[in-house]
Length: 72
Image 1 (tube, one colour):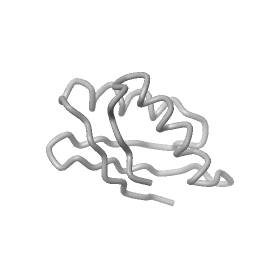
Image 2 (cartoon, helix red, strand yellow):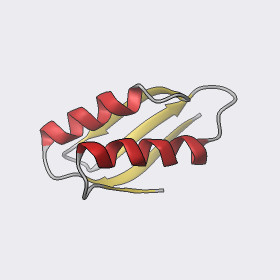
Image 3 (spheres, helix red, strand yellow):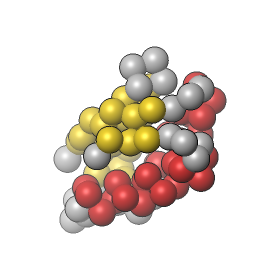
Image 4 (cartoon, one colour):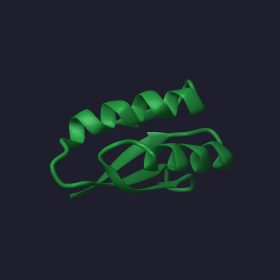
């Protein structure tokens, strides 16, 4: 399953770091963060609940940029 989320990220470098970080999280098959459109597209692995995975994604992304927001 693929879902698109609206995000707030301050710079393109942080968006790239958030994308790389998200791709390492269990339950994420692929992730793309677009700084220009302020969107994150996440494809989830089979058998994982999107809401639970996204909670872990948000925690990881806040380590990259503490004031980032992902609108779940």
